[in-house]
Amino acid sequence: MNRTTTRIAVAAALSAAMATAQQFEKPFRLQADGQPIDVDVGHAAPYVHDFDGDGVRDLLVGQFGQGRLRVYKNLGSDKAPKFGVHEWLMAGDKIAAVEAG
Image (tube, rainbow, N blue to C red; front, top):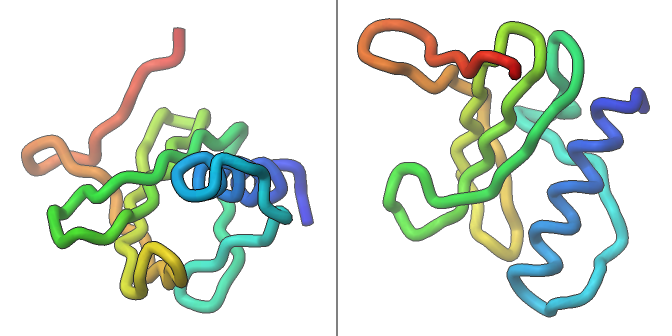
């Protein structure tokens, strides 16, 4: 497991623990479409939120390289998330990006 994947797993576990039991849970390696979630370049910044309004929290992972944001739709439930293939967060007809700085 590389450092970026480890950071994503730890951050997701922390976020889930704070949102439910207010205590830390054992970290685990998040997967999407059966593969470990990783970013192409640099650091990752995961965030859990219901992005599509279906009542189930999805996963957004920002990556340092190029500042792009991946959205992983939760195809499972909040208690048993199952993330699908990522889609890039879009701004109009272009992939959204956040500048470093």
